[in-house]
Length: 346
Image 1 (tube, rainbow, N blue to C red):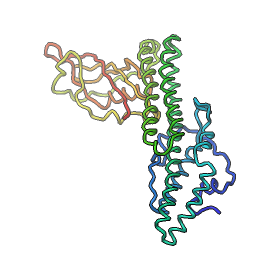
Image 2: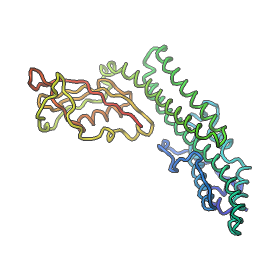
Image 3: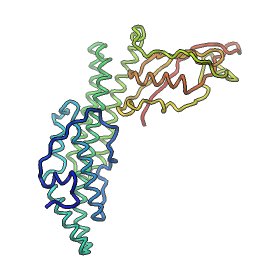
Image 4: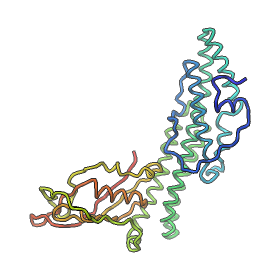
């Protein structure tokens, strides 16, 4: 019989009943699982803890079941379902957990603390290993989904440069991807005692892969911005239509205008879709500021390669800051300046 702790979706696994394969969602992956990641940080001191850990692992497993690798198979040639079948709760461990829960309930009922502690320790070891692997897989599928969006953004620029220039960027990205995939493979094969090193390595190399895409896309976008500007492909510039705010009491003290006050944090303008995917980048704007310190015009001078980031930079510059006018011969004058706006996730 199935244990009470393993009801719900887990009863299907432990009783061996058939379950229809979940359909992949139509929308992209969420930024994180609804279950807070623990990467195997599990401690059991009671039967209730046992129940909680099992239910949490069930949620993680079904979160993974809802998705698939973006291209069907990853660089190892594995499908997500194959990885789930290979690494998450094989039948022998499912049966052992069910038996351990039965033992724990009986030991708890008769007050046998020593036996209960031994049973919980064994269950804790199994659950911690499975939880760690489930978290690694969930992080992996999320990173691959983000990488797919990054690749599309990079390819849009890479197709416009020479084969040599494209190959250089491809090599950088391939090296980062290979290192990350190998780290995931090692983490899935490792024991629970090695989990801390596996977590740090996979998270670091996931960030390295995304950074490689951001750098290569950003470099190409910067190179091709002038051509895009000539063809009218850049984001429409900001041109002031409303009245200017009150003029500042001083100038920038230099031949170019400069920031005066930050009215809003630029992070408020960071597009949520860009955050989820991990898009970062530098947007270089050219601003025209009147002798009264009024921002008259702002345009993208160097693109980040992500239109949403370019638009956000323009919006923040037009709404979130004020400027001091340039100074020449001790007088405020109208002038232009280059203004960098960098979007970075921490």
